[in-house]
View 1 (cartoon, rainbow, N blue to C red):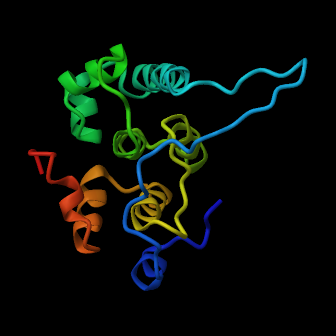
View 2 (cartoon, rainbow, N blue to C red; view 1 turned 180 degrees about the vertical axis):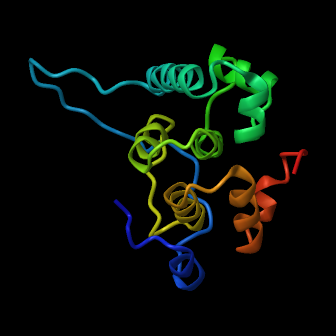
Length: 161
């Protein structure tokens, strides 16, 4: 999956945008008798939190210091994500998946739960996330690559960098 996404591809490709717009697409539905409505954004966030809890427990043994070191997600922030008081967006999914060494397939699945379809041919950040995961690089390598490729302003909110 995404074998063609490499650092050379990222450097030379013409992307539609650096970062995907953040919005849930409007949907309309016509239901037949045996159909259900698709899950709501809240239900998707619940499923995403369940996945985060499982990965956090198995990969980091619920050790917040290790999570912070590997993912650059503080204990306070992670607790808010896990208890639902703060929504999990794609930047959090990206950092978590890179730090936890999650597969590309699982990363795509988790991104979809926060309303983002990973499109590395369209969005530079998506391509960087995919390449970082494929190469098994660290969160610091990820930050350095984003800065090198002109996306440093995306991480200005993370004061630890």
